[in-house]
Length: 306
Image (cartoon, rainbow, N blue to C red; front, top):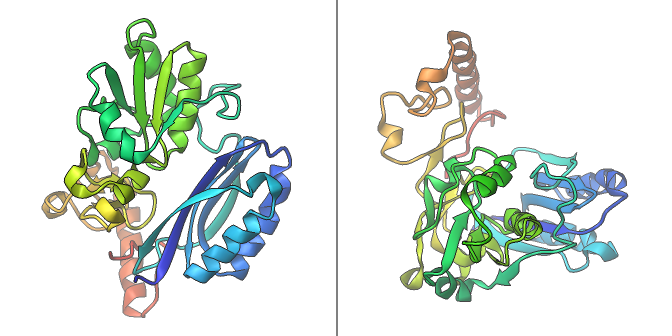
């Protein structure tokens, strides 16, 4: 088994005192040598953290001592290298930013669909299947037949719904995202807009890839994740994609061979967009990464190898 355990967690719950939770959570993570990011807002908690298994379980236990978080769910995966460089606990207006006031899964939410029931739902010709993730995530993998909203941020989702979906025609909508959090909020928004039957994949793509055998899967490609693994495949194995440091776009093995790809500096997606000043800055940063490696150190800007 790989050394480091990654735990992805979230819960929509009223946390009016969320600012007071920042310091003790950060202290607990520091005590147990945990790295990653946790977001806190009045609407709940969202985060991904990694460390040694016993330390992760200790921090999860501490979080669940708060009665409001006692049923906090999390998803686990393992990695050979630590997927994060530091620990951050951030205060936010929303734990997933939709930008629409009053939308909360604690008020109303769509119908949860278990991974083992997902294939049957999205194979129904009357169901519209919608990928709620951003364009760069969709580009490396999605479910067969799913619509791509071509959004660059989740804030654009309401406009996509307004311009492309009709509650009188699209009676059944099934949505999915990486871990389930965006879909909970998106389903709440769509119900607010009057859509009758809104379904979403419980636990997200990650739970589906962990649960459904590859031989039965309707997933195509890999799933982008927001840590140094970049992407995962079935059984949550680390995928083949890398990432461009300059623009953060995922890169396939073929794109890594492009003459426009220079580690830490540019890739086919950003090569023509870099100013000379930015290129020089990235070149100097990459130089420092290489020098740090020669000294046997890890530079904060270095992507760990998978």
